[in-house]
Length: 620
View 1 (cartoon, rainbow, N blue to C red):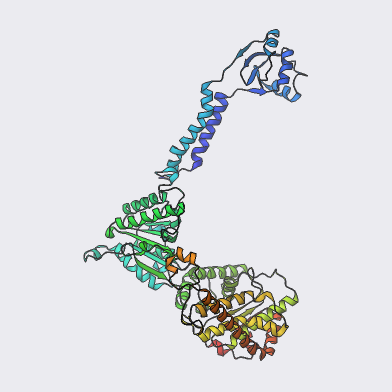
View 2: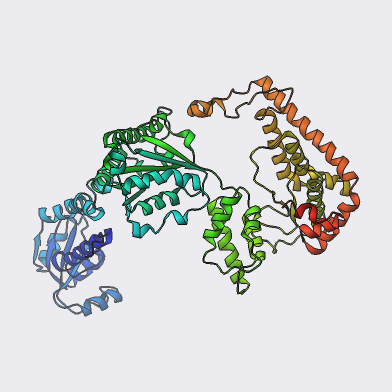
């Protein structure tokens, strides 16, 4: 049975056709409009009769065929094609002699008044049609109970066979899956928990960075439990009409209880559940009413009713505390960026359908992608397959994955961006300086690639470093080493060219941010002391109290932080000058190789600086 809802055009087109036909067959008459001056000529030539005179117009019929010189040729041609009576109409002009001229010409005429029915039809008819479409047809078209469907939630229900996702399709977040396993067991066998008096959590909040798999995990939960899956975005509840969002919340929970056991998933709940009372705007009042209704509904249904509320957000710190208390979102599941093992598992999932070459090592690919989330890794696998297909390869090999990683990190190659020899030399010196300083600092990650091929929007070259392991805590000495590596490009230009360029803008920005974090957040400055200061302005702190727990910077503190940041950067600058001054021969050799080959891998780089390959290969 086809229950596909009718659209606006299913109703609008038939109504439009009906009005058009009514206009033709019921109300329209075949009349040709002429000018009043031509009407006077026809009257004087006694070529008109049976006139109907109203306040605004004169209409009648032509009685003769001698129209030459009385009407324009094109109008004569039209009247010659018309069947008798050949009707015409013209706009009435204030002419006091008209009646006398009609009597003299023995023309039959009569007065006509405007029909009240036609007036009502032309004036009231369109209004009636608008109200019919607005109040009767459109609500049925949208399947809603309110005006234009504003009172019903636009919920998409997915059954297990439609989601097609299970826990096997979710990799790299084993802890999060373990947190939700208990809910799956409850939905499958609720008596196991109810017989002991246990209550399953009403709501589960899934928090994590974008792309970590929050929505995928929710669908996998529904797929494992084999229950209906309601999915809606938090922004779908917030509308410009007052009361619409609250009505949609009520409707959603009514549908969920009718289909229990089921899972209700609210994506991006921060659009709905932000802290209340922080704005006096009307739109914010409507959002607060919607949030209040959500809180009431979560309190109203029974814990063991079989309705589980899942919500996902990228910004849990902005949510209202009342939404996070026990009895509403009882359980919080945090999805972190996957570690090395997690990235390997995710890559295995996304490369199941790919024809991989024998040289592809997913462990190595995972090691080269620190900080990447599941969506990034899925994109890398897809880009590698597309790159191999573009080159008409039989399998996807390691070079395709390398290109996909470079594309993800720095953007696509832009070989069309032609640089002159002077700019190319500057970029080669700059990237060689980064690589040499990084290789000379034990706290820096190993250099795996150097390139002077432009990529993306602004990257004219890049030095790629791959960590040997996942790091969660960095020491002060390691941060200082990374600060030195960021300044390596600028110092190399100073020493080799005796001048500086604009190419170090991003390096200086990152170096300043790193130094500021060391001073203002990590307590790594003796002058500022062991304190962590918030960067949140006072206006934002008032808006989001959760972010204002750190002390604000006073004027003296801000000056002290700025002074310490500059001191750290100046000291790093002097250390890098001392390092590269003793490596000018290696710097010049690297510059020449980059100008010749444009890209150097790890082995070529180590050979150029006279370092054994095994020193870094073993660490990797």
